[in-house]
Length: 449
Ligand SMILES: [Zn+2]
Image (cartoon, rainbow, N blue to C red; front, side, top):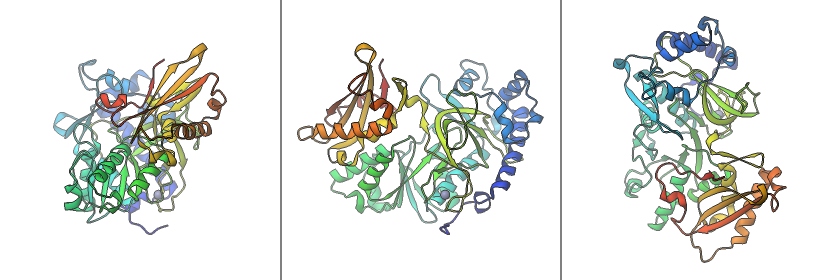
């Protein structure tokens, strides 16, 4: 126990038995609230012959069907006449948000002021667990707008006594760092790597700035990428995972998995076929249920919602930080997994190979990979890496390190290398990747079969 501080000590340190009892109480209230206020869930209970009063504890959720992003899209305009996930009248809806997702119309989310306070509390717990407190000044490079993360992080600061510098992007002038001497920054791994490169080009050493801690989120990343980022800045890097659906999980100073705010979000992990849940320690799909405290009101609530992210429950035991809430492995996007000769390969598997420490003298860290059909039913993975100077490049060494990292994590595919599987490499000058031509969230692993 590090004697560190807590945003909500009573809730964050609740003994396991009391926490489980609190969760069950909130499951009952949330289900009753859904039945009363959510047109979608009222119909869903009826159509699936579910008696809401029979759902007494979180285990009962496992018997219910799942909903997905597709379900939300099918129950909102333009497909349906009304937003049937909206569970409060317009006069009680404070803001409307949208998530882009990977396909089709954005999903709409409606937040009441209560929701804002709960979202902010989740981020406030994370910030405090990472050692932030009164007087800290934090640059938020995550984008504001229809996305809920940056906005509710900003409200979280008010609860803590922190100052937010809401740049909304990492391309802010270096004056921001010199003038306000921020102590923390929130951004993605790649944004913070680019920022470090830009500072260096301006003659500023990232290791000499006032920043004390880096908070990364917005996408999953490999440990290798995090270690590289930590080296470039010579600072601790903390991970957060947030979504408009309300899953705000974050690493505390122990950095042994992300704490899930169990009193506000219930998380189950299902097998990839979504048939049943898996045991702690096994990888599966993260399925979430909003939890409301009795009396709470909510603009959009979700029961058994498939996040389409995969994770592992690492432990429900107490953390050395004193928090009792469970910890999970950084969620990875299912949409960023491709199947190669019967083996799942995630973008993060490619990223590990790129970010081998000895490679980073020559690479910027930017990469993309394409999967093509090979000869006679085989497969080719083509990995492109952005180089600092394409002229002086030990290509064989860089490729070799990639292959040995990839083989270590994908032994099944390693056996097929040179036979059914070919991994090819190309090295491009700065700005030379295909993803630089595309707007929006870059897709770094693309299946072109
Ligand atoms: Zn902890």
